[in-house]
Length: 200
Image 1 (cartoon, rainbow, N blue to C red):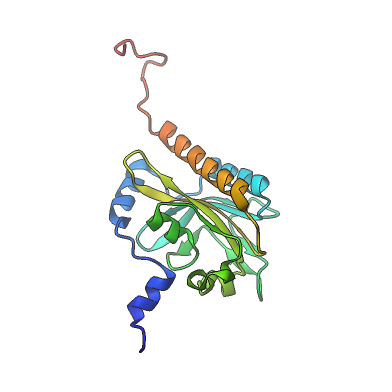
Image 2: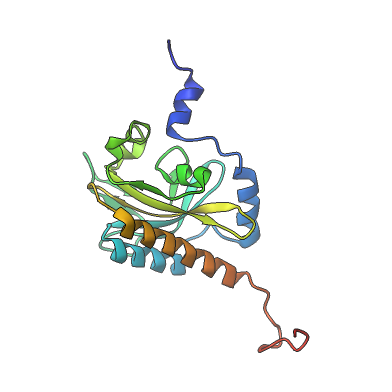
């Protein structure tokens, strides 16, 4: 019995009913469309903490993923080649929503740990395995106070990686740190500076 095309697609990228509300929220917050130096720095910190060569702070709309924060070896440039299977492929700030594992994290609303993506049939067929050479992934959702999942923080490696509980704690901790930064940026400012005398 043959599998309908739409069912095959769902084995790669899940349906995302929260996308319209997420896009609206990202626009309200003014994030997800431009490189962000602070998020770049947090991504770099994530590579140092995990030992993975690549890290992203990733915001996802209905059609694409945008790496507002990106860390890659050897330069601060956004376009870096991942030395994976076959020819090296440039990785820029944008990626199709059907590529990679972050869309699964967004829909699940939970962290995803893949020490070897080839161990999981659902994930082994993802385009990034052959095109980029990704072999391991660790990601956690960015969830705001209203329960919207805005995107992810993640690290990827072209080799298998035993992330374990320490890796999970690191990625969840970085997700919390990114959300703290987003909240700080969007807190109402006192135009007079200092404490607001109208507040108790």
